[in-house]
Length: 230
Length: 283
Image (cartoon, rainbow over all chains, first blue to last red; front, top):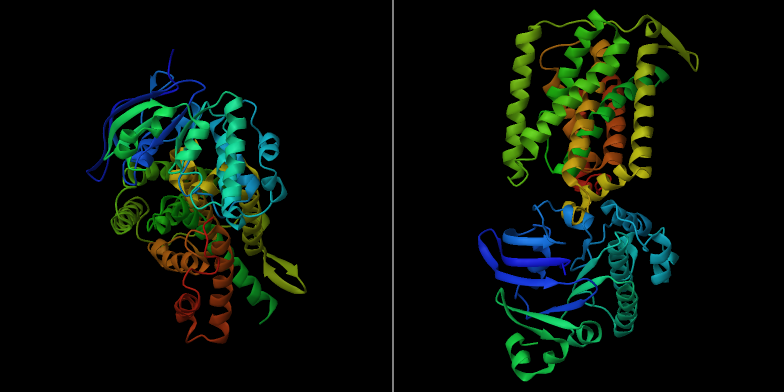
């Protein structure tokens, strides 16, 4: 079975400072994986490596095809990112932000109507500037924007950061619907409970190294907890 | 202020608006203050001289922007794309060097003399504007600027490419992650910006004549327009270009001793009051 996303001996660095070392893992079609580790472990860098934001060596493959380092290529191949901090484009409206997701030119179940069905708050503020939304609505917009590309793998970087519990519950519910459509998820998240609700497997990073991986139930084990210091 | 003075201001403002729109778009996307923009305008004017003499002014109006778009493509592919990780000062100095090279090449090809470019017959003479006889050619410049501005704003607001340009101008990295080919967007913008410089040069040729140094002379004003409008803001550049044209023209009549200083006074006043310029946001 070909993996949607595969890292083979990936190293990543910023201006010579090494952040990831020899990381190897694969995400299969339809599965949800949690990527865990303490702050600075290299989780966000791992996701950004797909888009060649840091300097990357080693191979990153999507559907078995090694990507060439062009940042816009992964989205076209169905690997989309909801970045940390949401990175909503402030001078564009909600609708315009969502339409940016179509740049990947992929077809599927997600379009502006189905995204508005998933997040009715966005429909109500469709003409508002993206930056005028609340933190929770901005996160919904960031997820909706990535869904507009009809991804096979949706990578989310700290999606609950700074959000109220009631909004987090809404996001979990929305992500369950995304899962039910067959989309794979790679979830970077400090809230271990959210990962346990959604994922079937975990990968643990520590100081840029992949130090542990296994079934989601293993996350409760004392040695795993100590290793990743959650 | 009479109608003719106001129209003179609008005509000069129109040229500044066309020229500064391109510069603002390039800065908004690439973060490059392109000091070669004045030289591109000058290239458009000299090319218009040759094309007008051999074919017609109408042909120049099409050929010159297209030729400058090709030069823009070279600028993007050879310089801007490869220098995007370098500091703004380094890239700015390189574009300044390019401006000097382009001006020297123009001097070698066309010589040091002022060259006249006649307006087409249909645009010679005057038209009646609210009872005032006013040169038809200057009204033509004004009309072209209005059409250009409307088309540019419409394109940026309605088309997918326009949306991608606005997105990439705000956050290139996020745009690329979303699947926008930022390199292609950048090529489009630099070609368009250079083409607008060529259009401004072509329109200026019958208005001011064509002469060595015309690029550097207008570059100062265009830089003031872009900074006052809000660096990287297309709407700000358009409004500030028109405003500066009126201030300069009317100032030359009412405050002739201070006219040359007015753009700089406006620059200092606006930046002291609002450092981000009028618009304060990109494209």
